[in-house]
Length: 129
Image (cartoon, rainbow, N blue to C red):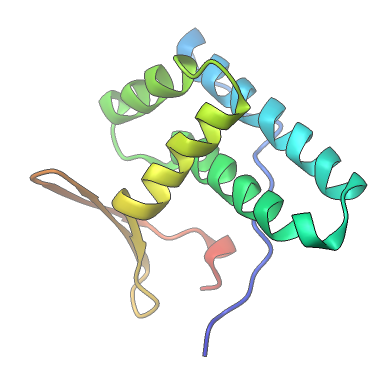
């Protein structure tokens, strides 16, 4: 049986010493706000597409808060910072959602799979654990 959960909003109190990381989070929050506004103003037929966009942007933003190393955080921030618009952020988040993050329902950890690298870090409560 699939677990249903509401994607958790990005943190409004995110702080970091790197302006690039903060800028990346701000981009994600701005895209999140635009998508949320669009969800409120759209018909039910557009909701599924917008909800997936919201998940993708939130995956990217939350990744900035939970990656286990500062190098990984800086890399993700640089990628997000290079996105020219909301759609590019959505696509970047979709990439991480599809290819890097796999949540094990029997484990208390995320498994982040990168080419040739495996990293574990604690699963967020928001993931239905």
